[in-house]
Length: 180
Ligand code: ABN
Image 1: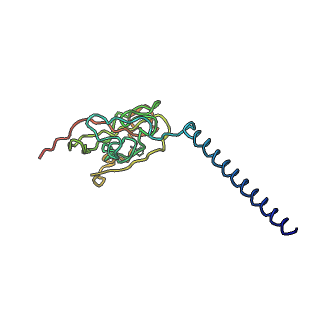
Image 2: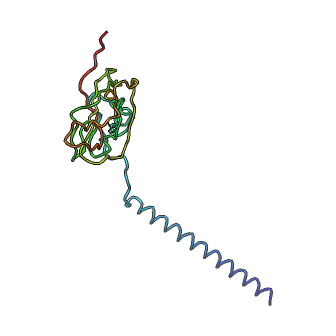
């Protein structure tokens, strides 16, 4: 009698265990299917944003030397300052609320697309507190300082309506021609 009871109990217990695990498996499967179907509906942050066009005659903005938001941009070879393009402006446009200094620092940078050297004017943007973002100090081809005004580490807002320095732009002013 007790042997039959034992066998019956064992059979019932095994059946219960089987049903319980199957139910929990099905539950998990159902939850994963519902979660998987909802996945595409969830908001996704797309960091890339719209595709950027290269500036005419310039490297792709997807490359370091063609990206005006980074210090390796080819026009910044002799810059010293916060990049206007990180401060609400563009590489050649000062941020809103600032004005461009009329006196500037000049550099000569090679455009990697056409291999030509361009004279670049680094105008400071003046009239708002220092931007503080994307500081870039490259000074390529810099010579030892023999006159303080022959150094880019200067506040060129001296000639602007406000002396308050915000950021710097890089404007092409011409193609450099080698003489002698
Ligand atoms: N030309 C940029 C800059 C501004 C203030 C001080 C140093 C350098």
